Every structure is written in C-alpha cells, then in structure tokens.
Length: 259
Image 1: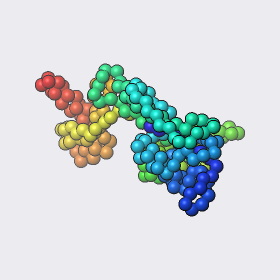
Image 2 (image 1 turned 90 degrees about the vertical axis):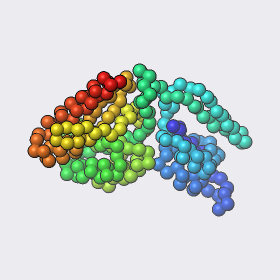
Image 3 (image 1 turned 180 degrees about the vertical axis):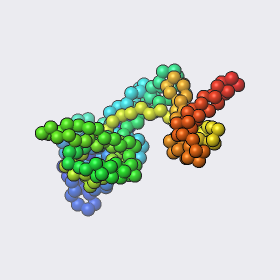
Image 4 (image 1 turned 45 degrees about the vertical axis):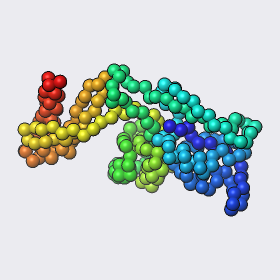
C-alpha cells in the first residue's frame, strides 16, 4: 500500500521545453491514482518513480494495521525548504486473526463511489446498476434516503478496484442525472475462499468454501447451481440448498473421523 502521491508543483524543463508539474509522462502513469496536494515548487515524483509505485503498490491510502519490522529511507540530492527530500518504506507483517490460522484474513483497499438521486426513474437506476456490474464493480447497492425539501431519494453506491474507479464514475454520470459523485478509498478485510463441490441426491452442486479466522470452515451453495439442479430434478430450490449444506457437513464429519 502506498500513500497518495505528491507530485509537487510549478514547472520543470524537459527535452520538449518547459512543462507544468507533474510532467506529461508522470501524469499519464498516475491515471486513476490518488494524488496528495503539495505546494513544493519542485518535481517530487518523476516518471520512473511513478512507474515503480504503480507497479508495486496494490492500493493507495493510510498505513494498514501491521507489525512493523523494517524501515527503509532514501534521500534525494536536492535540499527542499518546505520538507525533507526523503522517501520512506515501511515493511511489516499483517496481523493474523485470532486462532493462528495459516489461512489468514487478507487486507486490501477498494474505492467507494456514491451519489444521491431524487429525479431518476427506477428503470434508469436498475439499468445503471447493470452497467456497473458489467464494468467490474465488486458490489453495487441502493439505500433509501431523505433529500432536500423532504423529497424521498436513493443513494446509489458502487464498490470497485482503483483500476475500475474511473469507468464506474463515468457510468454514474452518464446513466443518471446526478451532478456529483463522492469517492473515497476504504480499507476492508477479506476472507479467502475457494470453489467447492458437493454431491446431493440430484447431482453435484457447486459452491464457495470460506474459512473463518478461528479455522472454522463454512460452505455456501451457489444460487445458479442450485437453481439448475432444482429445475432439472423438479424439486424445490430450498430442498437442493439444504441438501447441499447437509452433504458438506457430512463430508466434513467423515474427514474429521479419518483424521
């Protein structure tokens, strides 16, 4: 994780003449990356630095929770009046959840985009939601809210990776009548999961297996797999869902007995 990038301000001289900071190549490399405001009249981020940080950093934001192990520092050749010309690297380990599991909770950073709507039709909001999903949103939801002059409204929210944030924002502007979109980086903890398949009386059902911080495993049958099995066998969806869970629990008990 890297902090928002300070590029500096003012102008610099390059092969093509005098240009504003950030230089064109630096700005191009930092597309979609949050920038930190800086009044320093110097180039604080070069194209090489921008290429390195955007390649190595998985996200941008505050320092995550970790056990600090090593601190690295690198100083530039120019002395700045406003601040030290220094780059600092903190290396540490993310805390494992209670229980010491070797399948820890992962931490990452995603972007939350929100807009308030009181003059969009339900069809327009639904269409926008479909577009957001297709554009790579991790999650999309609506929240009923009260707006100016007591008008009922809807807050439309989308969660996505930094690389998709610009595309998601464009969809919100294009497909709704909104005049503004709020966006901010948010940290999250994510349980690792993997595909899992169980056998029911009507055939195999696919699902996801997740492991909690204390080592407990939980199985969630996939809706589409349950639906296809229910339609093929002519039984209720809930029957297939419950049978899939029982099949997983039975298989787990057998494995525990053998272990």
